[in-house]
Image (spheres, rainbow, N blue to C red):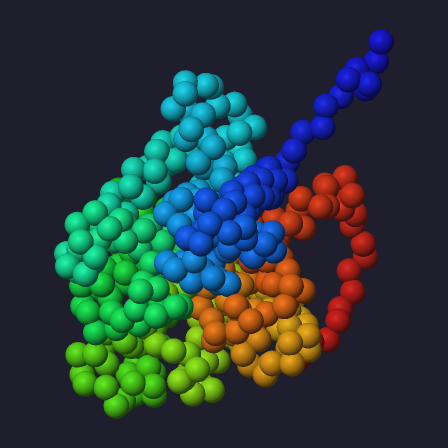
Length: 445
């Protein structure tokens, strides 16, 4: 008898990642719908529960309810678990749990895990995963301990530490959820704008979480010997410095010139870092100039490093596009960085990611603007925040209709799993084939 009738369909790595996030989101939504999840003891509508679960699982931070005042401690714990699992990745967490119960992890699972965390090779994938897990726990606990004195003085010992831990996990996972609603609904970190302990700790956690696990490994192995780092880690670190320094300078002179120097520095530093892609804010973005809003949108879309808890099109994507542009200007055969040639596959991938994210952001903003009759710049801000899984808002999310919320849900999901992952999951190798057409030239520019 032929084996064809018994052939089993196996999910590809991309399909496993997509399905994992769908299951996580739906499970979270069903739990958040329950009366036990809200302070009032009332049911939450499926749309709003789904929106919250998607935002938490995709570590975005866009919310329709103030987290502190609407959700019970059970609901907050569910949100925190979704943030942690979504930040580290569904596949990563599943692999860790599988290892803990003593079950063998097969080659297919290891390959999927490699794709999920952007690991450099398959041979050390389990060692790499353990490093991610241990590093995450250390940084999140350290952040919680650092912020505890501030929150304990305000909320008491138990609640204060819980708020500190929640804030630390949310910051490291670049999620942007907070428990500061007692200062006013949707207040985020505005009450702590001039508190150096909170601001510096959150900035450290956001940058560390968004740096990428591969860069962690290089720092651990080589310390401060920058020349020994991989080319990707070098690009990430240089880009991180540039993308913090230049926005900080603009914000210092362009948006916060009326503040005292100490508060001015803390506000400029925080708002330079948080758009990539943490979702906390210490400033009402409605008070920003148009230039400040556009700069924030650009920072949101750039995002963090690949293989990190951050979203966005990734700073390596922008770097590859930039060096490709420079090589064209210089009429070079191929772009290079740190005396290493950039592969054609990286260039084509960067172009695809850039175009897809821009199209999703613009068309999503256009649709919401038309549906809600809201100014395009505000909906563009919201759409970019969803696609880049940032969570910053100009305050329009809670007032959106169901259709607009569904649009943002789709954008958050696509932004977290990656547009290319969605495409690769939908189009098999057999469908794309390996055709070779005759070459021809098309004029550009």
